[in-house]
Length: 189
Image (tube, rainbow, N blue to C red; front, top):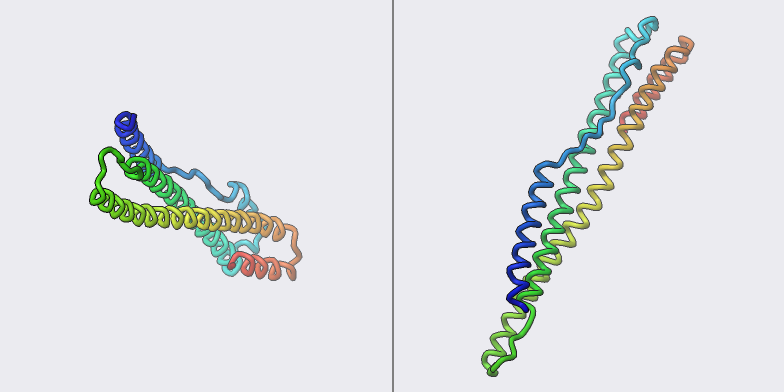
């Protein structure tokens, strides 16, 4: 029966490796966070021509773009780490399944002691692989959390930019400075 499972296990492991590599290589995150095309269409608002105002909006847009870029990097790291954990888990399962049993046919005391030493070495290897799997899974979770934080911050800055453009349209001259300062402050974190 074991002779049947060995080639099956190796085949499944190779398929898993190929599938994992394919998934990592073809990873695509099409998430975009951008300003609507009409948000800057307020050409009748002269204050938007002011260099300080332009700089504040440009800085906020850069912060938004940096958060999106960071989100994509963390998201990809999370995906790669998840596949590594999956791959390591598969290796652990195969090693434990193939090498984790004793042959009891005509075993002498010497062979038993040698077999026990081999099993101790296997246990150490499995322990190292299990630790690597745990670390990879933990990193994947933390990377996903960081990715979502960056994504949320990018959306927050985008919404702030849109609101600031609208507020400037309707603002009195003495309120514009407050709007710009709010934009600078909230997009800098």
